[in-house]
Image (cartoon, rainbow, N blue to C red; front, side, top):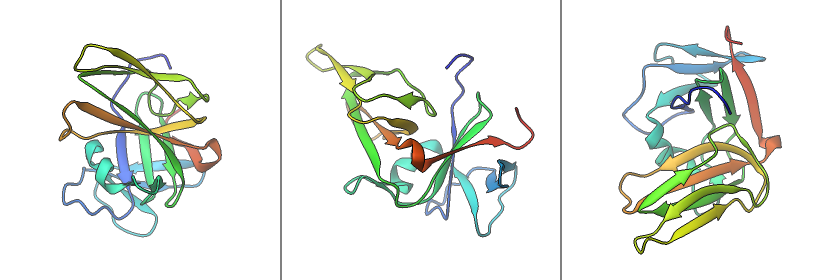
Length: 168
């Protein structure tokens, strides 16, 4: 990992939310272009608040991606692109205190420790990933008490890593 962790940005194809960010993302082949304006059109992904991804991109029952999305990793100058319909692993970490180790873009091995949680009875639990893959998104829903996160893991073959044009 290394370096300063900066919060990722989320871009979604045809978002349903009325709340949109100030930028768009376009796949330029070997890299992605970040357009600091709201651009519409085929293949363009629109920035939305990171927390909205919970509602926009995941079909929790089916364990699939509802809409094509990209997670921009500012500290790495890299983007993770995941297509619609991709099967994902969903790892829940919930408790009065949750500490997640990996960050978006990290490769995970099967049975790797990904989080510690503390329950309301002050018991510490370890959360492990039941599948290998790439951590593509960490969903957080502020409506849940205690804290609840869902780590979204996609197979390496289902994640396109692309640098941001002009960086790196």
